[in-house]
Length: 356
Ligand SMILES: *Cc1c(COP(=O)(O)O)cnc(C)c1O
Image (tube, rainbow, N blue to C red; front, side, top):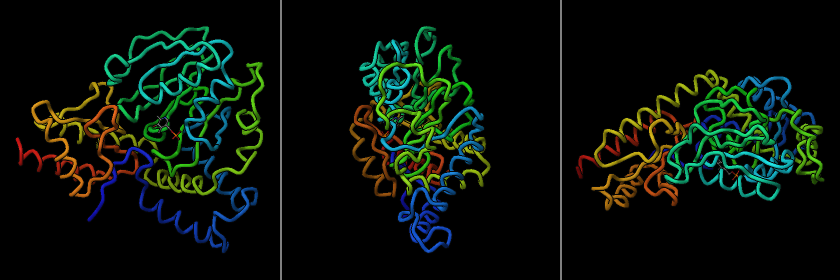
C-alpha cells in the first residue's frame, strides 16, 4: 500500500532526492567512490559543498554580506551558540512554543532574557501581535514556524536590533527577505534533508561584540573562516540537501513552492473547517502551512483512537499530534505531494460518513 508520509521530522523527502542520494552513496558522479568515503577537503566533496552553498544563495536570494554554513549539533546547539556569540547583557525573545522555550532557557545562562511576547496563555495556538522589541537588546529571537503547535509567522518583521530566526521547519517554504535577519538557522531534517546537517545563514558584522571566551567549535567565526570545513562536516546529509535544492530549483524555486504549500494547506484546512468531526487548534491567522494541527470536535472526542487506526490502515503515516497538543498533526512540507493531502482528506470524509 502507498504510504503518505505526514511525519513532523525527520520527514518526507522527494523521490528523486532519495534516488539520487542512493546513487551517490554507491558512486558519486561516476568517480568510483561513495560520497561517504572521500575526503571532505578533496575536490569532489568541495564541489558538493560549493554547489550547496551556491544554491542556498540563489534560491533564497541571499545578499553578498551573508555567509552560509553547514554545521553539526542541530538547531538545539544553535539555541546555545546564538547567545554565546551575540549576547552582551540582554536579548529579546518571542515565546511561541516548545522550541522557543528551549531557546530561551539556553539564553538565560548568558544574560537577561526579555520575553517580549508569549502565547503560552492559550497553549501556543497563536502568534503574539503588538509586542515591542527593546532597542537596547543585543538581538531579537523568533521561531518562524512552530512545528509542534502548528502556528507560523508569515512575514519578515522589522526589528531595531539584529533579528535571529529558527527556521528549522519552514526554510525554503516561502521567499524570505534575508536582509532583515542577522542569523537564520535550522536543522535540515524538516524541509531540507536528513537529520545531521544544520544550516546557518549569518551576517558577519553582528559578530565580535562580546568579550567572553567562546570555545573554538562554538564560535561562528571559526566556521566562517574555514567555510564549514574547520572539522569534518556532515558530508552525506549535506549531499542529500544538495539534491533537495536541485529538485527545488527544477520545480521553479521558492515562490512556486510557496504557492504549492498554500494550495495544499488550504485544501486540508478547508476540510478541517467543513468536516463536523474535526476542529483546527491554531487561530486562523496564525495557521502554519507546514504543520496542520487538528483535534476531534467535542462531541466526537472518543473517536480519536479509532480515527488514528482508520487513517493508519489507509496508509497515513505520522499524523498523531504531539503529546502537548494531542489529536492530529499533518506535516505538509515542500516534498509532500498534493495527492497525499487529497488522500488524507478522502480518509477524513470516509470516516465522517461512518460516524456523523
Ligand atoms: C525540530 C526543531 C528543532 C530541533 O532541531 P534539532 O535539529 O533536533 O536540534 C528546533 N526548532 C524547531 C522549530 C524545530 O522544528
